[in-house]
Length: 267
Image (cartoon, rainbow, N blue to C red):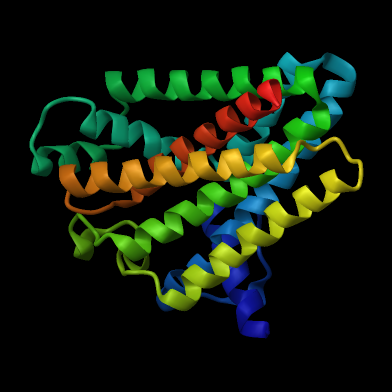
């Protein structure tokens, strides 16, 4: 149990700016095995986003709450996934070779495609959350929790399915260049099921968090987006990189929020 807690803290340190206890230590292999707790970190980020969103809506309304909730996640994670999305847009936005695309994604400078992609995806998040907040603040908070959790599970699945596309010897996070183990995938998926189940159960007891129909629709959207990203990256790069994993997380998150909004508006 102590080692499992250590793995969770490793994942938390990798994806957020939260300081961790000194006793945790670090081994490169631990980062690879900590993939099982990526969804748990996502749930933590989702809880923070939901609390900021819910509190802000009490005072400022849904639009400002949506913006503050998004800002909270960016500050908490250091824009980790958003940075990967921007780099992926730069690398794959134009018609360049696989080798050139990988080279572009290694460049820390943001280009035109990255800037446009970042503005559009952040703007879409804020717009969708604002619309959700106008319908039900509790439903918007539940959507944030599920989307942040499930989108991290999507990255674990992609690590298991696809090989590393870049130069493994020079990977920024070399342990993540290895395939995820089946046990890690199962733990990650179980975490998502627990979170989704808790939200659905709360809804069945009268809490206005959205229907089971909204939860299932958002999970379907996540699955379709993950399959599309997997096919696209396999065809375009032959695998994944850290940046494309971040891009996948962002795309799955937005797809789930959109599906949740659509399901609640038409239910």
